[in-house]
Each structure stands twice: as C-alpha cells, then as structure tokens.
Image (cartoon, rainbow, N blue to C red; front, side, top):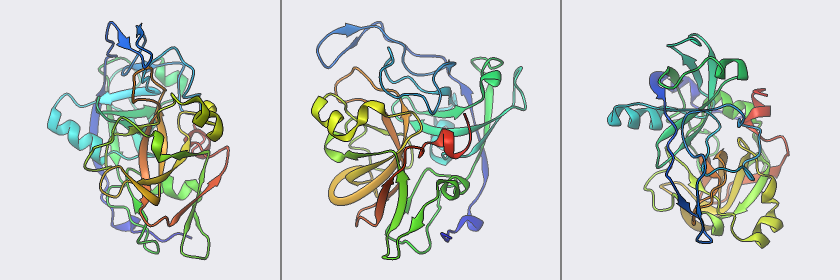
Length: 286
C-alpha cells in the first residue's frame, strides 16, 4: 500500500458553467495552410476519454464537457483546486443531480474538463452549472519524497495501481512514453498545478518510434527527461506522468495536451507500459 496524507486534505466546493465553443475563422497550420475546424469548449457528444486523441478534423477539441467560471479570480480557484478524478455534480438545468468525473484541465482557455455518460450529455445545456467537490491539492506520497503529486484526486491515485519497486522507485502504469524534446505549448509556465502542455506530433519519425499515432484521450503517459516540480523544464533523468486531455492540433508548437499528475526530478518514477492505463478504464467511465 502507498501511504499518503489523504486524511489531511481539504475537500472544497468549486463550480463552473458549461462554456460556449470558441472558433476562429481560420487557424494557420504548421504547413502554412489556413483551416477552419471545431476547437475548444461546449458539450462534445462524440469525443470522450477513451477515444482517439489523434486524427479528428479538429483543433484542441476537449472531450465531454468544458466548464469555466465567469469570474476570472474564481476561475483561477476552479482551475487550481479541481483535480483529475474529482466528483462533479450538475446543479442546474434538466440534468440536475447527474454526476460526472473531472478528467483534465486545459491551459490557455482555462477550462476544466468533465466526463458524463451519453444520456447526461443529451440533457445538458451551455450555461448549466457544474459543482466540483475539489480534493487533491497538497496530496503527498509519504514514502516517496522525491515524487511530487499534483492535480490528482487521492481516490484516482489509488485506482491507478502505482506500486513500489523495492528500490525506492514508484512504478506507474502508462500507455506511452514521450520524449521531452517534442513537448511544446505550455512551456514557460511557472507552476504545474493547472492547465497542460502539448505533445507536438509534427515529426513523423518520432511519432512512429514512440507509437504516438494511437494516443487516446485519458491515456496516462510518461514524459521522459521532463521535470515539472516548479513548471515544465527539460532535465535529463527526470520523469513526469500526465493524462492526455485534448485532441491534436494543426497549429505549430501544439498537439494533444497533457495535464501533469506527478513528477520526479531525480527519476524516482518508473513507467510500466499498460495499454489500459486510461482513465476511462481505470474508473469504468466507458
């Protein structure tokens, strides 16, 4: 059993409203072509965690439901306190009382992403209010001081199935490993407690080498030589674990987004490949 300080964490309410999709008339692709595509926000009926993160006619599309608080300072609280795996409850509209799960956070647009079953999605409306029982900020692994945890509900941490290897390392199941050299948009942030940063997929040889063509929304991935202790930096030997939160992108420097869940600058995280290391399977959402 992995010992944590979960009994010392605060559970607190935050809320957001389902946001309207945002679309620019054109986005300029990495090849210099103008394209018009669906993008962030709204209720996405046919793209959920467990579905491909690559190949859609889309740019930064978010799975399920995208929420945001209309007050900017309150939205800061929503995006910092909400954690992957938190319970979400619809508190207005025809789907009032329905429950879902936080599955990611998207920086730049500052959305929190929530998964609901299809029958609930059909009842939701843009502007409906979603309450999140936020818990996870401050979570620590008591026997692994060199592993920093962020953006993760303690129940989700338990469900993932992390385990010690007997040599002071934490073994974490992931679907893919990703080299830090292809991480893009989101670099330069001064913390990793909100938002995401993107996996660039423009180098076909790296995509093939690491098998990234079959990335799925909700996949747990290990970014090798990436330290997110105080914001994303390249550091040899470091490892960061994250969850894929939005689809790929046509824009230069962008790609499927990753919300950080844990990091070790000293490399005390050891990824173990498991094709079912996806939140949709881990929490039985599909």
